[in-house]
Image (cartoon, rainbow, N blue to C red; front, side, top):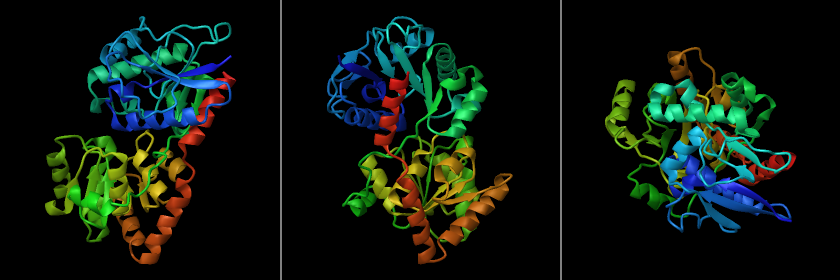
Amino acid sequence: MVATLRVMLDQLVAPSDPQLAEASLELARALVAAAPAGCEVEAVAPAGGPDDALAGVPGLAGVRRTALPRRELAAALQVGVGTGIGGGMIHAPSLLAPLVRHDRVHDHDQTVVTVWDLRPWESPAELSRPAVAWHRAMLKRAVKHADAVVVPTHSLAERLLEVAPSLGGRVRVIAGASPARFAVPTDEVGRRRALGLPEGFALLAGRALSSENLAVGLAAVAASGVDIPVVVIDADDGQEPQLADLASAAGLPERAVHVRGSLDAADRAAVFAGAVALVAPSRRAAFPWRVVDALRLGVPVIAAASTVHDEVVVDGGVLVKARDAAELTEGLGAALAAGLASTEAAERLGVLAGDRGRAFSWREAADKVWLLHAEL
């Protein structure tokens, strides 16, 4: 008898979050590669998507389409109505899953969902009201019906249990990672030129939202006294004027700041290869994907101390403790200046980052997912 793990892959068919789409793809590939003997992986995807959307996950046993397209599917799951997904062993890399009453003991049905980011609970003003309502409703359904809820760090597990204490012992920690083939491309210089980027810059990532703390990050680069350009990636479309205003307020010349949006893995790796350091000023409760990218490629990391960064970075970078924004700006700036004070200092931080980066692996994550479902 074959055991089938059914993975929700809606983000590959109708992507709404580039980071979640990439994570879903990487986890699905790893689950196929790590499938134990007698086990297989099937994709569950919304109706109406292109047939080749899941081509990036070879080895799937099949694809089951739901009765509804992605938007209607999300709305139906929010209220627990029928969607055509059915039962079985279901794993979702997000909260989008059939969270309904099921019998794990007799029918062997089980549903596991994932929470990467607590923005809907900690910074709800940064999201649309429908998005906040959907996430909160789905977490309530998870409290009632999920067999387990996966989070990427222990600190996020603790915070999630403050939001939803009834989850109790059902919260499990399985970290994310950079793409399995994430490496500096051979044409890195050409890719940076095509993106219109200089060489040797301080890198930041995020959107012009208060929880991202980019104002502090930009001010820290200015305070460091190091005369280098700044590149910001993962910005939303149309946010260039806002980020330009933040840079100007920080004292950085407009020509020194380059803003780009979400990049594919190859372009992103090329950007990291041109960076002298990643400055990570955010302290919010979310998995720091770009910090993990920097660690993976051995790029020096200068980060604000937080429960998440402390757990992810450990000794792989410089963690700056601060009581307020002014102190954080000064601390990050001083750490950046010290880290770039000499070639030896920069190389040391790079080695520390690379050593820590090896701790994150999608294959290890997949092994833990299979073990979790076996335990359930």
